[in-house]
Amino acid sequence: MDGIFWTATEAHHPARSAALASMDAVTRGAKEEWLDLFTTDAVVEDPVGPSVFDPDGTGHHGRDGLAAFWDLAIAQSTRLEFHIHESFAAGAEVANVGLVRSFLPDGHVMDAEGVFVYHVGDDGLLKSMRAFWEFDRAMTTMRSADSV
Image (cartoon, rainbow, N blue to C red; front, side, top):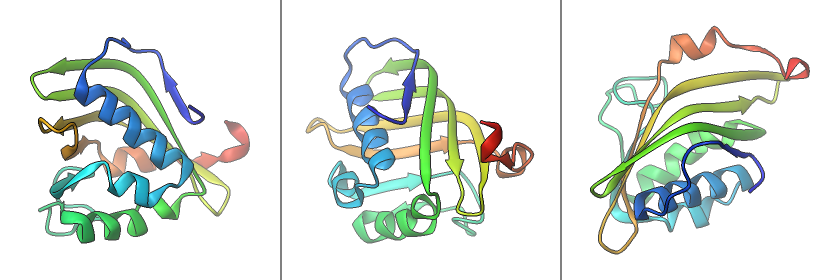
């Protein structure tokens, strides 16, 4: 999968599989495919808490909310990469540790280091995705994409 740099365990787990499918859809710009990975009442908190993407910090809810999040956050990058070096699965969830590298239209790149938690239902669809990363910390990594 282009754009996913995975050095964590690859042991099968439903939440890990759903997380990988989500990352794959994002790296390919496949919005509808990404939306179809989620339940109709899913919640995305990326990042968790108030942010420029979610001023009230309540997350993005349902298909319309997730589609709006895609347009507001994901679609603003010309390319996204996932660099995952740890993955811990338990119950119906997986916590992936690493960074998301965003290539921006102005020629800059930014890294959001964090913990990315995916929760699946019995049907294998994502019920939630919660990303624990700090916007201000990510901004300090802003640099020319030529340096990557």
